[in-house]
Image (cartoon, rainbow, N blue to C red; front, side):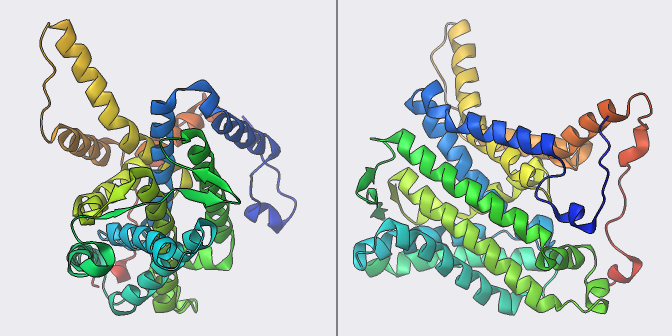
Length: 366
């Protein structure tokens, strides 16, 4: 068991709790850097896909996990970032190193504009409002056919960075490292937001808007900023998703993606960066695990491989129901319980993580 002795208030906002924790994360980063040397192109692509989903998950986590605002429309921000990034390259001739952050910025501005009329909504009403935005975004992509090419879609050009050409299929290792760099930068930005006064405002709004307002927090402004940051990070993931897919249209960012993204962070663990990564592993690996298991079973039975439509969605839904019933804190919550058990053994109490009401009596009548 490790005891952290704090000698100043700065210890509460340090990037790492202690030196060994920093060492573990450094080792994890080193392992991520050598992934292209350990696996073939297929698994490099799967690892890249997982990192892109993790970026999108962190974007939604800021809004849902940190600020407590439910959203079922983040596929729209994925689409905005993706289309903005490609159109800036094709129409204006901007290089990727400029169009990529601009795509995230445009998505962030779209998030702020959407937050202005929706900050008065709460709970299920906010979820329905963002759901409508996702549906409208799908229709707008089709309507704006002269710009978006409608249902035919757009091709993402090769990434050019300082004379180096990066293609998802031709140079999967370079594309993986690019996505890894973006992931690390997003993690650092996320972590620093949580350490700032803005991050504490997010937590205050999440726990109780009434109490946050009483402490001087501008709730509407905080929600709008949260929407903007969340949409901006999600837009960056959408831009990378477009280059990963190669070709995309309105069906690439449908409402199912919004729902899947929300389920991902719930399964991973709401309110933590780790939860976004755990959930991304489930989303990226689950379809491949199902396909591999199906092939193994059919081969063992001497049958031809059978594809069952909707199998991945059904299993994903079953996993979600299981987590809600038995582990509402998600995968990361289960890891915390296991870690705490071994740290406090034999003094661990079973009801140490008993579920508490996350609202005050003043919140019940909203």
